Image 1 (cartoon, rainbow, N blue to C red):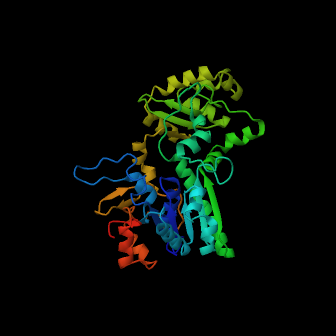
Image 2 (image 1 turned 135 degrees about the vertical axis):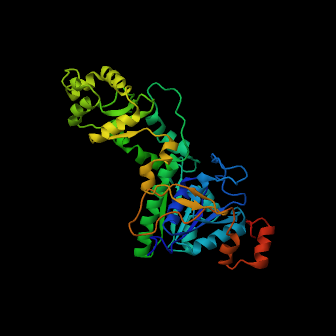
Image 3 (image 1 turned 30 degrees about the horizontal axis):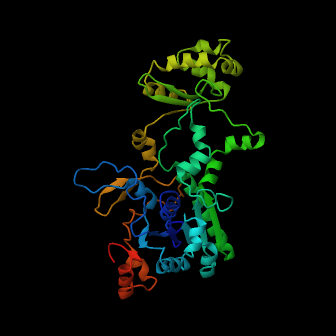
Length: 407
């Protein structure tokens, strides 16, 4: 088998990033993903920063490409009776129906699990919502910022002590966490459907993804009800934990919690006397004197640029990492060597890099299958598979049921 999901047919009725991101992972694994978009297109198109390109070239909608590569697109007005019927027809022949419609909208359009299982008993019906299928807020719309970061307490965990304003966040971090959960749920459901012949219902929420992300803190709070206090650099749990600014104002991050790292670290930064200093000689002493120790460590790190510290620490096998910018990460030699940034080609033949799925299967073909589609690029071809051609297709275009550049 060239690709692990080769032959799996997916119908995606979803927008923005979370659910489309899960479908993109399936496309990377060889699934045939048909993205059902409104006539005007997924609102994610053009919604994020457009990378700079040479004058005269078409823009590259990089974030949309990331979550929609390798798919086919049909433009359908699912709020019309004929449009919803077309989508039901696609689901009847699919293995997976994936959406981010709230349950009430699924029912309104006849795209809920009972309706689709009546047409296709083996179907995996997967839904991504903000808050889950039950409870008082099941019908509440939710996004990455509000459901994952906000209500899921991720934002609070990232805040500095006494910081009254939440930090600004970059897009889709919660969406892509939830996408991985949805992807895993669909794979498990496909396995059950294959073994039993019975369809499955998969529900994933942004709030649930936040709970899993926060589970180290949350599991303790579920026992004692105590909210963890955000810790700054001074209140860190042990000395060799956290970030330190170097002479070139770049930051280096350390994580060496075991006590045996302390003496070689002291020698490496030019202060072997710290290992014998009664204020810092034991774990407890370092914790009790963390403000003074932090001041001294800051002074030591300020004597060399990051690159020198990296070389010095690598020679000693220390566990460290740079606090990279996004542009530094994009140029990272290790990331490139590991194939994290494969190239894809747009319709004009222009090649650009994107981000690989965070997993690989040895010996199997896993990766981007091609560019993201234009709105409704494959409407005619996909609907031909349902027997909609010629005059029937023209009438649907005229009536605003379907659209696309080639219909």
